[in-house]
Length: 256
Length: 367
Image 1: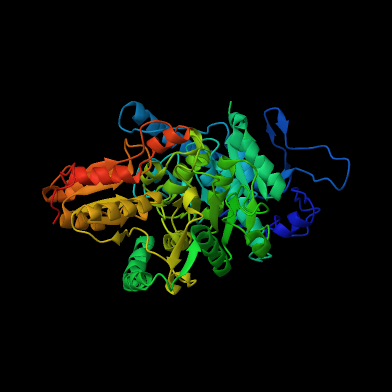
Image 2: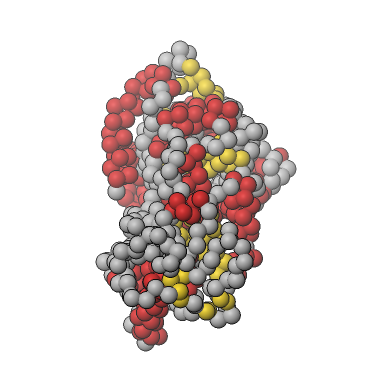
């Protein structure tokens, strides 16, 4: 699909996220998502003005004097898609929260974790990925899986222990996997996903250099809490990723 | 499911080959002799040649040619992209291997000894063993963890533990333990080709031992079925089960028992998980007495599981309580004389077999 986020643009140089009609020669169809890996369609609204998002003390708008550095503004379409994704994540979390009430009323048992307030981190990263890119995380894991494209119904069914869940009820709230969307857990230990993500990144490099699939450009993202940075496996993998030059992004989330 | 079907198919096809192998092995003077080290090296070499997705990872596997020279020559042949020297980070590189295996590569991860695998046990159990189940079959982990296991000579308590019982208790893993060169070649090839995580427990003291192998074993397509034990020596009076180095001890014990009129059947387990309960139970139903031998700690060990299996399935066939020979219930001592007492010896197996046959002294007139 024709999008403003074609991979070649990223590979060549940092491309601007700003795609106002004045300086973007590409026309965006009304139903295509501006994001690579997204399976959702967005109805385009009339306005094409830039959307200036402020999140807490951070600002998306950067003052760039130089032409070569990217302009980090996003369009209204992109902003709406991001917002929709975050709201969906929160909604699933809230539904799950209602189930958590049942947990306290003893109708449901097990581990319940919520991602409320952190949705922007996963949405912001995952929306830039392609279907073939992978994500690995610890928990809570349902919001990241949603952003990557796993249907909300499959995730909620999994959280509610149904056989129609994405892992047939065998994984549960802490172990959400989806081969199709390259979502590799959901793992119980906060550090566990870091070496696994490093291994998946290793596979991308192996495919390109040993199996000679020259077009393989899969990237892996490892999400983990800031507390994980005390763990030995984090440092082991930083070392190995630098040593073997692996296509991985380590995302440290402030989960306070 | 596919893995089990595949193994059944392999098992059926190799049922025809194995009797041929044993016939050939009786002509051992004409057969070629190779060490267990050469067997493992050739198995790795052939599997890496056959499948470009197979790669090796571990400490000193590349430039040092392997801590025990098992991976000798492979770096020169396949290059640093397929034979990876890792930093001293068991947890890290095991997890990296599992992540690579999630996506269809076939890593063979070497632990310098399985004692070091405890640093990485979270990844072996939680990431490798359980992922196929947790993802409802979406993700398979065709990884092999290999390295020396159990007691070596004079390496002390922290380098001598046997991990067969620990790993074999975990669903999702397969655990293999070869004895001779034929086992080493056939089982390692089977492990690399298997779509599930396999823990491959070698023995440092066996690496240098030579065994005769037939041409069948030396063929590059040779493979042994996982989950099938081998009857190394047929008998009728008592069944002795063993794995790894203890198979050699059990065979020596059986020779000594022969002189005393006890004809012992020795079973080489080969596969600790899945355990070949059918072969063990069939043997016990024939001989009515069982002696289990292992090097590891006695409590919750492999022998305990075999004993439970026999009691569950063949209780009425037992003429004597099951005798369980295991390592002493202490951390392995360092002094040579103490070490000898902490590991089963041939005399211990002979004594146990005689106990099971209710003979503590030789009969005056043997039949």
